[in-house]
Figure 1 (cartoon, one colour):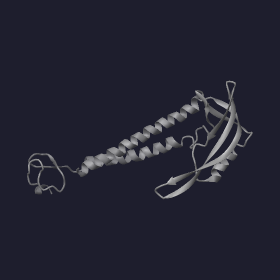
Figure 2 (cartoon, one colour):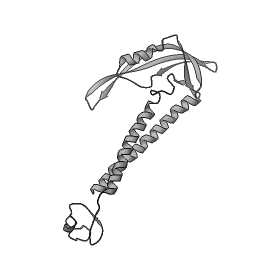
Figure 3 (cartoon, helix red, strand yellow):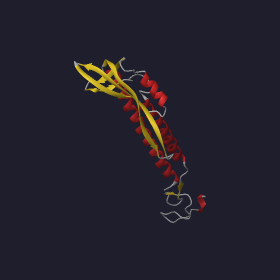
Figure 4 (cartoon, one colour):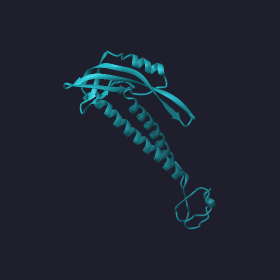
Length: 192
C-alpha cells in the first residue's frame, strides 16, 4: 500500500467515525429536546434521596475508581394513578461531595416538578432542562465528532496532495522505492 493510500484509508476511517459521532450527537440531542418539549410535568414528592456508588475499572491505568451518582425516588400521580419511581442523576462523578450536594437539594418530603414519559409514566426525569448535565452526551459526541471529522478531513486533503509517481513508459502509479515498474519493468531510476 502506498503512503497516499494509507493516508486515505486512515483519513476515511477518521472521517467516518467523526460523521457517526456527529449523527449520535444529533440523535441524542433530539431525544433530549423531545423530552423537554413533549413530556408532561407533574408535581412530585421526594420519598428518598441518596448517593449511590459503583466501582469503575480503568484498564489503561490498572486501577479502580469509585464513582458516585444521586438517586432520588419520587411519589406522584398521573391520571389518578399513584407512582413511586426512582430517578438517577444525569452523570456520575468521582466526587462524593458533588453528588451529596445534588442529593441534599432533594430532601425527603420536598415537592419538585418532574417530567414523565406519557407512554410510560414510570420513566421520569428530575433534572430535565437546558443545562450542561442534561445535554452532556450530545455535547460529548458532538465534540468528539468534530475532532475525529477534522482529523479525517486533514488526512484526506494531505493524501490528495501527495506526489504521485508514474512510470514514464506505461503511466501507471508506482510506489516510492521501487526500482522497476511492476507493470512493464521499465527502470525507474530517473524518477528519484
